[in-house]
Length: 268
Image 1 (tube, rainbow, N blue to C red):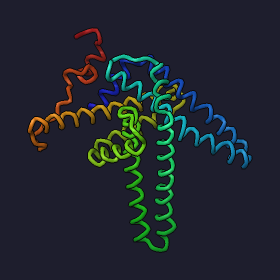
Image 2 (tube, rainbow, N blue to C red):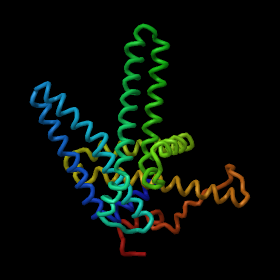
Image 3 (cartoon, rainbow, N blue to C red):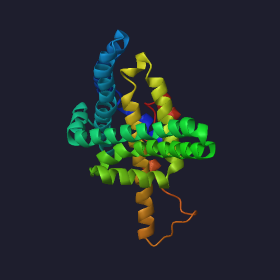
Image 4 (tube, rainbow, N blue to C red):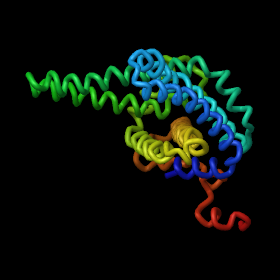
């Protein structure tokens, strides 16, 4: 709930600049999608193979990762300084662009392999060896879920830690193992956002930025969690159930506001 609350108020307070960046990202996605759609409706197999497929891959492994790291770099600035500019998103794309595309290729490739494994083991192998086939298919499905959960924090980890791809993936895996339910909840929230924001009226202005706000806020909450634990352990404390993590709600203007502040923003 802290993640959702923080992402909402970040978006609310900086709506103008996030709308602009979201519009630019949506246009960058729509251009290759229009070419892909034209190739598909043409009915020409060559056009489908040499135009539609490359355009779709471009969106998945290039445009979407670049858009997210640009927005996440802007979200990071908004969380840290409470201010930012549209230019910050382009700085983020230039700073993390190559590694973002490599991450996009990694997730697209391994998601394809795991999704194919789910189908092959469940349908093909399951027809001749049901127990083995279904077991392997279930294992591939759980591996796919784990991979998707790591993607929630992988891109925010890239822009926050400015680390190499291997270190980013390692950190994302460790965070997922240590916070599976939290990241599962964030992933479900992102899925609902994507289902709603992919509608044509909202795609241009409310699609990429809300996802980035949710991802950036999730990483910020996890960062505060581990900072509080580290400070507690450094002071000689033990990490037990009685330890309550202080997320600094009262001192954070994104977390100390409620529904009343939305209805009456001019009142204290």
